Length: 161
Image (tube, rainbow, N blue to C red; front, top):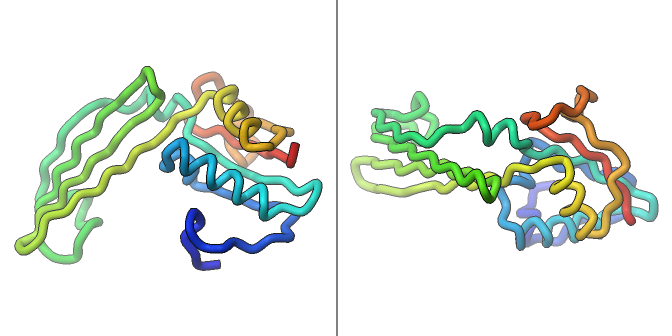
């Protein structure tokens, strides 16, 4: 399916829906509630969602910094010449981080704001519960690794409540 999952109609009738690569974490709280409602609507009775999310370990390891480079991130942003400025902000009390990128091309300047919500297992379970899900399994990663206190990734399987 090729669609913007917050805007376009989504299909229904699934027994399992996956939402991976910690994509839930880059959405605002309002967008997350909307998305989880849409995921709920995609499921058959008894259906399950499989989600991974950024844990506090990824936040703990993040430091505030500024980087200015020609072709920042080895040319990731643009094929041609540019200067990139990355500024990282950490908001530990809110469990949020921001990577702000300013890209300066010869004829254009633009920016990207990558916000990321970080979770504890309890805060992720609470958010899923508010959205109408019952968490049935919590793991360290969706590979089945055991959950660690302040781990980097939290994997969850949840069913309709």
